[in-house]
Image (cartoon, rainbow over all chains, first blue to last red; front, side):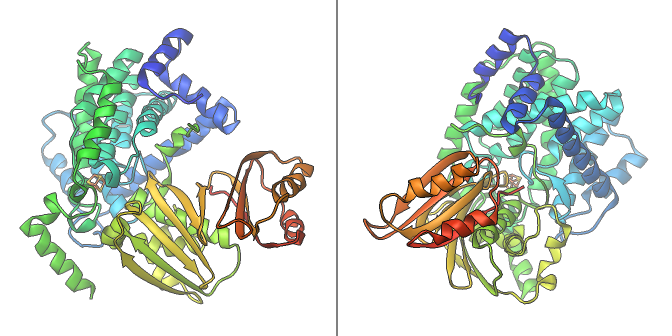
Length: 293
Length: 217
Ligand code: SF4
């Protein structure tokens, strides 16, 4: 049975006294005609691929096609070696892991799209960093990833998760909402708290456009992964102390969709507006195409 | 609404940089390869809209080519595909057409078959036209596709052959360009059928093209 809305999901969790990841497992097992264990193993494989991408990204400083990105993660690691982050170890890990993954992506390295490649650093950085620092078991990390998966799926039933369709709201924005859900699950939040965290994260990225410079998934995408990973933590912290979004999650998703429709095509991955049309971006574009010829 | 997998949002494991412009492109290429289902010497890609404007920066050109050559979305050699490919002549064209999806492509193989598809986000794709026939194939099912001269009785004949193999048909679609003209049929199947079935279907009078399309992994 397809779950079309978050209110349906809450109702089902309450009626069956289940957590979101349990519903995700059951639905997926039914869909794929597999056992719950097989789905767990598949989810674990995804988690391990995320960890590999972080590992690869932390080591590399190889530049991208454009030659102007690829070494931010190394810079950040060097900084933390000298002076620790103001917000502590978890902040350090989330920001470096998010950049590591996003930079690995632009090198055409192997990553996990979550939900998309441009936003691939957000969910993994939050899950892995918090798990390492808070000693969260692999099983619980899988539960977090399954929770993120179902949350993202319900959004994607209403709006296609592509910058070209709804702007970056639908990529990094939804990734941040998924990460907030995963984190709240891993920290022991209940179903309401998980979905409040999702709502808070999603509500606060509405309107985010997609205007990549020179059409590359580099500027502003890479650093945005670090920002929106931290954004997810804020949402989770608020939700876990009982803060609630005044606007229900389903209405926020509808708003995201409508905002995406209202957004000019110039700001939806065409690189015809926004940052992509700044003087500096146009200069870079000229240089890039000259070098290519 | 058909149920989707949570792995549509926490996958694929792929090479970057873009799920719609890189992984989607590879998968469109792979589907075209599976549909053509034969060796070929020449392939041309016509990229539309955002695929055309921002494709080069996302490796869309490399992805499409790697796909038709059979590379998977997580193959790290996609990056160097231009220096790997030999024996296949390839070319690209770039167009704007607002009647098409933002991320859209025509793949023309050996000047014989034109396969059109969209990359609809998160690496998901749809093949929506094959040689002028509207289709809706997303690569999640093994699919039998045939083209034939429009005439009565064709559906029951084909489904009969498949039923005899005890293969369940998940969905069946037909279309034609005019009454008595050329028609197409595609059947999504729960399990793959063997190429021997294709041979049997080929024997039916007035069937001029049959292909056994493997689903995408
Ligand atoms: S700005 Fe556009 S290309 Fe970059 S991550 Fe966001 S949606 Fe993707």
